[in-house]
Length: 224
Image (tube, rainbow, N blue to C red; front, side, top):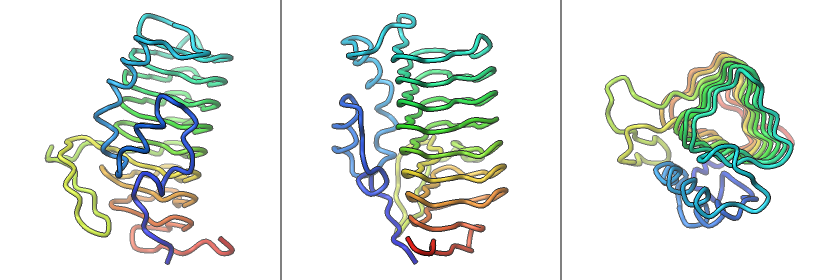
């Protein structure tokens, strides 16, 4: 079985944005970045970012951004170059979207970072989450971010990681692919290049370069 890598440096191969690079390099585990998103955006909005313009007083956007009329944007937000935000999308604050991402119809995002070429194209929920480069969420897949009992999230990896955070959604490594209709329970981590079958319900951490058929049925990708 492939390695269960859940450290920041193992999940994301490159960070192409100077205002994020230092933060990702500094923090050993990706969930440690989530409480910092608001401050990262606030600093960028105050100082400005090269190549970005102010869409409003608390929203910075890059070049060639397509925003449909029925999308709702609530700052603070940073939206990169060549991003498409489709009808009915709801961005409700503290979201950083990298270049060439697609935010789909009726998808909702809050307190999240999407790196380059991420797709959340159809009826997705992304809360308190980090999605790596080229990560993809199939139609109707959900990153659940709050336990039903409201207690702090524990990351179930090679050991139990006490996060001290009440809300953590999903952490998707680069090129992770989540099948249609899947639900990732709070604090779930999917390794880079791993595919998750449609209609899965997952909890815990899953190794890189794998195929997750269900919670306890994981196979290594052949030839990788």
